[in-house]
Length: 316
Image 1: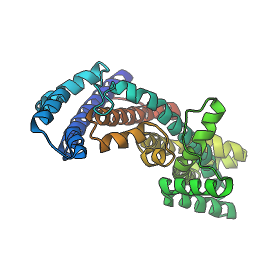
Image 2: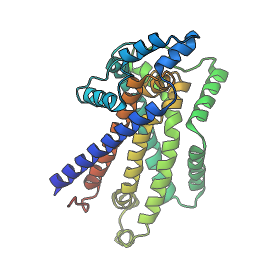
Image 3: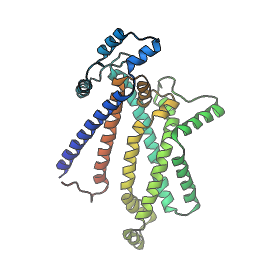
Image 4: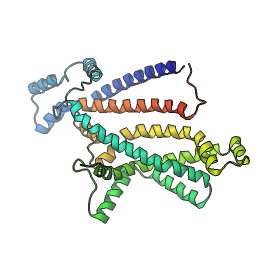
């Protein structure tokens, strides 16, 4: 049964990514202007013959279906083409930036789970107490504050109190320097995710704690820790797992503004620059990379359900 499910999911993932690749490729071509137009606009004159020559060199004169075929064939062979701007292989431009964004997204997700999950449990256990109201206000604040505005507030606070701006200026030399560099931007991004996880954990815990088996465990004299963590949290974690998977996928593509504010040379920041310059090979590859990450994370989240809840069986 599991093998049949995996085959179906892989087929669905393939079709989803194929559809995404077509949408990405076509929509990018529908945007007015291209890299050649930008080059000649900045120069202030247009030589039709020279413009046609450059478009031919870049392959922009080919029919759109041929351009799409060449791109897909390159993706399969890990040949992403050359950047129109730097004229370097796209893989060399993108490759060094992937670990930066991955570390920032991973640290943000770690912080969101570290604070969101236990605080959600505490809020549910201490329902309608002063601590519960404080935590609920905290979670509402996290959902209400845009991450980019919070990032700007953090920068302003650092300038006001320390006289320095914690932005990326050079590559960190040690693991500690790297941690300090990513700490503030990851906190700015993870604050919203932690608030969302906390609220969902609280609501799921409250729903589970009203079930009959929880009252049975209480009547048998089970300890509070056993009831809260062994029985309640274990059964309330499935919807929380879903939102964690969604947030993990969102963080990969949602770091654009945060990376821009903190001047972090990651994938998201580089994507903005490539879009402005109509650098097709870079934009196509980066958006497709984000789509692959989202699809894979959703797939892993589905598989995690069976590990967390043995009652879930994959069948035809």
